[in-house]
Image 1 (cartoon, chains in turn brown, purple):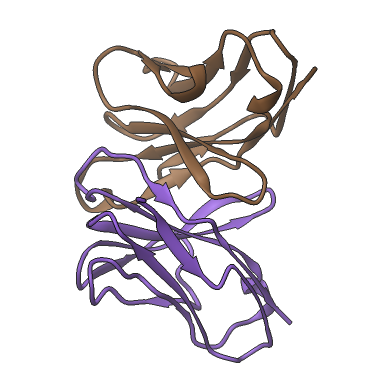
Image 2: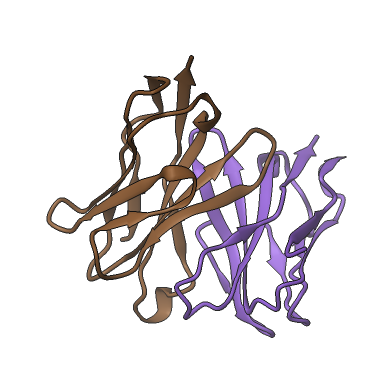
Length: 116
Length: 114
């Protein structure tokens, strides 16, 4: 069965420091991987995606993520965190094969807090 | 402006009283989906639609119905709401189920069933 794990409910980091939000997935084959961000009282916004090609993908607001097939991970990173990055982050995976194409599986979310 | 619009944004209702949450997108997207968000559980997919007149179940379809008669609209129907359907609901759309594009989300509908 397809699944996504975000092992940390919360990540706290000081402004200016690098941040990492972890995600591992369980999908057979070659998954499509996504990161979304949710600010308070808002819908989710797309940050970046990995479909194929270069394992390091760059997205909005200076975020990037590295796809690691051997570790089945897709960690979100940013070299220098901002207070405004504080939000709830979701990793999502889609299995592009056959009958499950329309299914998108989300992790439980990681609350990122960046303090001044 | 490209957007996904949900209504109502907030609703308090009572057990058993049928309700519909509407969702409309103006981007000519083929794919639409409904999710519910609950603390500690993340987002769980309720139903999705790959195109007009094509719908399928997600992870938690029990107690919900959907229809896709037009491309732009994808209403979520709760025929007989129960308190365990109290949740934050999101509608989302994307270019196509076979496309690798990202989802565009509505602002959410917070439903309380007493």
